[in-house]
Length: 351
Ligand code: MRU
View 1: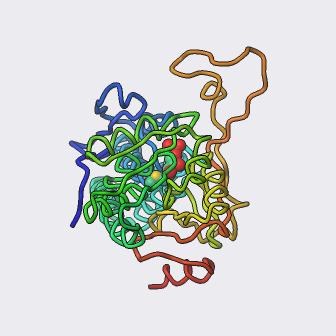
View 2 (view 1 turned 45 degrees about the horizontal axis):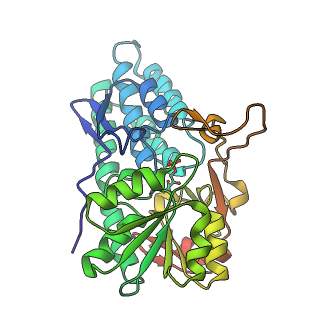
């Protein structure tokens, strides 16, 4: 059984991208339409759309928007293709950490490179691919949810960090996909959601989408997780990922690593839920994952109001890397991968 969320954060409609503006949730629930490649680049960078799988879909759509804009600009198909390949590379740089973005732009690049027909047919192929990536992502999330629900104990309290839900994917979610599938089988489970400073994806987005679905959720601030673990109130942790290296090291929202250390200390299983498109087998370990550095204002201000002294130093990495030793399993659409991750990841890509 599937306990689906009705949230579809990014879809393709009438030659445009239709996306939920995630910067204003929970105050407003509003869709925006994106019709130009540069607008899509900015929407990804400014986190109107966010979450690794969702920005993968956005990247694929962004390439289609550029393809549409380039119509009539070049008198040779080869020159048009060359220009479009450069735009796909540019789109892939809109955020650095989530590999789904590069993966999706590369899927589009392969179509461009292999095309020897005409502009209209190429645009159709790229559009079909963007739609397929979106639909496929929902399918993958549902499978992740099914596999993950098997390791959720009866009546469990699941801690999550950031938002790896319907809002962060084509729909349904990875970590929250596990929650949704588990809840469909056992409606006595509940979620503890870390606030997730500085952007508050846990407070603003995770609580929003779980409350919308009637799944019990308790909001805690980031520093509280060890307290509740120590009290025996957390049974397992499930988070998403932005990029997983070949050895299982997993980058996710800043603060995830702290949660993983606390979980290890308290003997609580810590799972990462992610589609295979989040695994970057080209890198051996998490040391090679580029970590996004975001604006200082995200730290110094809350809702436009300064919360600290002027003139102080600020550092704002958007992600951290949880070492594979702290991860009990990586829940994918192909099943739950277990240590030794070098082996289990390689196997998952073969089958
Ligand atoms: O900066 P964000 O909000 O894009 O970061 C999102 C996360 O870290 C998610 O946990 C991750 O992308 C997985 S989403 C299924």
